[in-house]
Image (cartoon, rainbow, N blue to C red; front, side, top):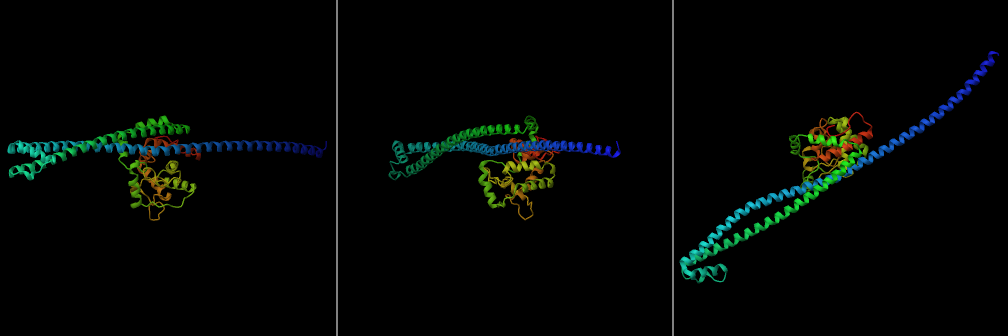
Length: 396
């Protein structure tokens, strides 16, 4: 066979197999595209489910905030009533002594009238005391003086007796109010426990190591916890202080509404503020605080305790911890550009990033709050696919 014929046959061979390879490649690419689409679809479903769980944890947290506030308020009222009752008890002892002194003075006046005026004089004293007679009919000046004195003694006795009865009635009313306040506190505490259980169930869905977290919480030294409790929380507080906080907001801080900003701007502020205050990698936790406090500006308050703004600062705390984050000359508790860096600073002061438990417990003095924020932060970390930090558990 001539060389030209051999080359022609070889060319045909290459062409045929080239077409086959191209077809196989096209099929493979098609299969690869389908697999990639399936993977992307599953990832989107997983992320959507993760976002649903994050929303669930944050929603349960909102209920807990209100329950905690009501428990604190009921407990404060019970303690206030207990102290008022104790004060009334001490007052009662003094009033009993005054009553006995008035009674003794009255009896002494009667004895004096009897000794100086006989039965007639004593009858006249009694008539004068009871309002059926008059001292003007007494002819003896000495007896008249006794009668006047006796009448004053009886008046003092009657006033002391009435005061004593009023005090005892007040004590009875305070005791009843205290019993009701204690019952209310117990009911609120039970409601809080139930909602904490709901939170734990939601956290478990995010596969947070709840048992480990609980153990680490118990390991926190009492002295450290007491130290934190002595500081003012950024948020939380009792419902009874709401009026005081709102008055502060009107009179002593800037609390002016601003134009809403999109979620992506919130994310920028979380990242920027976390970087500014030394925990850039853990910006997920700052974002979690924003989520559970206001859903990134959707619920600006005021809360049942009077907290307000995107990071739900108490005005009394904002007064000393507010930050002018955007440099416009004012620290506005309602402005995310001020409130988010203020929250980051507060967390840093509380122990972040070395001790996230202490930092978050400083922000809100409640163990459930620490679990809630860390659970949401863990969800955000997973959504971001960030393996450089976390997983977020207490002490993590």
